[in-house]
Length: 411
Ligand code: NDP
Ligand code: MG
Image 1: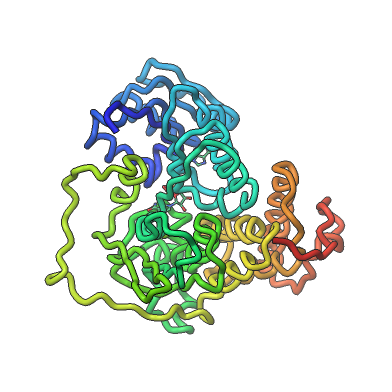
Image 2: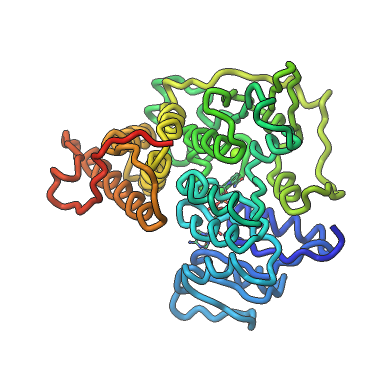
């Protein structure tokens, strides 16, 4: 790779977006930010635009009244503009670091337009499922994982066929509550959940890490990216987050990828693949760094892991429903409207009201997502008012939801 690659950074003002821009700062001769996008942080985007002078910037939502940008370049506004940016003709690479289902259409647009998609936005792959795989496999787009575990697995696989893989071992930090007793988990607060021992990330993924919903999303992500069956994907807690994941092959060899925990390592690899670029990341200190320890996850205390993996096994719309309910529950937890253990209760509640029908079209998927969000909000309301409820939306009299009662196995 010799010429400068034009990179679109979606979610530029977030944790992964800023780490991506750090990588680009280190390699100005290799990467150029062609466009930067954010949701509503107009001043943050303005500051980045002043530094990088991209061709244009995009805000998904209207800037606050009276906002006056200092950067005089082209500002575009609207969610459709974020999606359009992902297909910009002059772009080589799209980094999708949007958080949540909101990133789905950009993922589809980048792949359909034949870009290299450096994907951090795991929710779009999990929820989009077959739609994303079709856009990827059916076109010329490339999908490079940014999630550290999946970057590790990608590197360990070295293009060997799945038939040679005995199992994938996906590591998890265990989050801030790894050692909390069952009882202590009942009292954890928002601030506790946001105090991750290793990773400094956006709020949503930090809470997902605390509940292990993140690991469930990642099991589904690994299944979709690498085509490995759920029975061959294991999760192990590895608190120091040095081994980012492993692949055990059928000959008994296990290959692991290690580095100090920094998202800039997998981001840089997704940008530069197949090349490995020089950088100043702190090298691993295997002697001084302490032992590498592994333990089984506490599935009973962190039920979202099983709930999510089960949703993945059931296939069809279930991963999208798991994701949507989780997004709503996490937002409610962050707003102080739901307790920590309520997150898994709400997600479980929504899942049991849904049948694993096929996803079908993008339009259908949007309906599924909207219905799951509505069911989650109803369940949260019922939990906060202490009413015992049947959240079946047909009974509430207030919800116009698509009929998902036709239970058919899929995938
Ligand atoms: P943050 O909350 O820090 O950042 C999210 C970014 O997305 C912000 O720039 C936000 O803009 C932007 N955004 C949100 N909605 C839209 C939209 N509709 N259109 C355009 N931009 C939007 O999240 P993270 O960086 O932590 O996470 C991003 C993704 O990467 C998530 O899917 C997460 O699971 C995944 N990930 C994150 C890791 C990490 O270390 N942080 C590790 C592995 C995966 P604004 O600032 O205006 O709100
Ligand atoms: Mg991860």
